Length: 300
Length: 274
Image 1: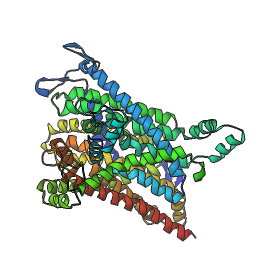
Image 2: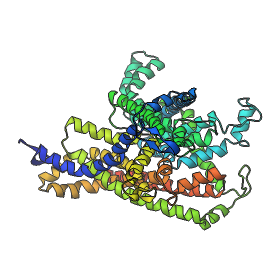
Image 3: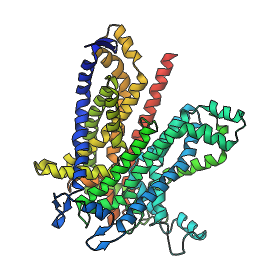
């Protein structure tokens, strides 16, 4: 056993690791029992069947995959695929909107002195700590029939005279963006802070126009931050359920709402709910892999 | 970076972003003082909704539940998370172990809430077939909240550990401190603000969690966010505006303390170094 110096003390690597296991043990055990185990259980349940009255039949089957793709005993229907497609579409558009608003916000925060920018960042992050239900509910009132945004949209002819902005797709987008924006801004700001402006100056000195400078000098440096911001927005939006439930109206169903219906609603089909959960797991893992492949380590 | 470099259009978009974040909060705040019950027009200034709120027995029970849940889950997750962060940071793990820890900490952060909710609700149902203590209620709520809070505590504490670095502990050792002495008298005092910040973050996360609580709570363990959601589904009472305003004022206050305390400490250290 070779001895080495750790923290100024002569000791062995294995001794340090033993003590490390002691420190990390309780926390990792907790995550193992209440995070890993439940996830594995969910994976297993996804391949079970729904028994009568919503019980679970523990027989292995691919029925839930078929159901997800729209096949049932009544033949093929596009319902579930439409919901999946709608969820992905909303998640992608929300992410792009968050990037489009988040990038200027990150630069704006970074444009101030260190002290002010810390305060501004806090200003952006604080709403994300307030209750999601409350914020969503505020949009319900704001986008309602007799509020300024609705009559503005009516006068401009975006919507018909009898319609209002809530409930509907527009309301869902507003709700999603305002709820995800802080998580998009945080990693973007971190990379704005680390920007090497020397490269930008060099690019200008070499007669690059503003667009080429922005693209090659700034955006390429910010790639890790952009990927982190996409991951932090995309996956949670995909699983979002409160916003679409409150702002979308009765017919506006996303994966999250469909899952909720399987667990508590009239459908009561836990195995199918678990299969839908797997769709979310796959997307989270995929985005984490992309994140780590592009060199990201931590999100903040 | 100077302000000059920022194009005008970027500033406008940044302001729109801020509006998106703060207009809803302002809206609820205004409505909580609006005497007009239906809220479409201004009916005069009133404190009635706040007064009625304090007489509401359901709100009182929900408040008690929320506070118990937040305090207990914060305590557990702060202890577990701090130990975890220190253990990950100071131990010479191999690259594979390090990656494993990074994954374990990051996954709960990016996992959609609803996924964690259904996984927990399913596994609680499994545990329930062995023992009835996993019936939906306060215990399941506490377990669920600790599970999503741990990672955030770890991330906050870990980033402070990284910024403290290894020099100080080596210096302390050179000055004949024992390893334990160096940790308790040099590192932990500096770490304490990060631990408090992590705990406050965990506390607000617990206070405002809706989705996970919605799945794992029982009929007797209604929390405030669940109560608000329930009232929205039943039809809105202006008391909800007052309640919401109170909740986000508390959150705002806590977060303000966290960020001010951080900058205050930095200032003090800065002064000392001069």
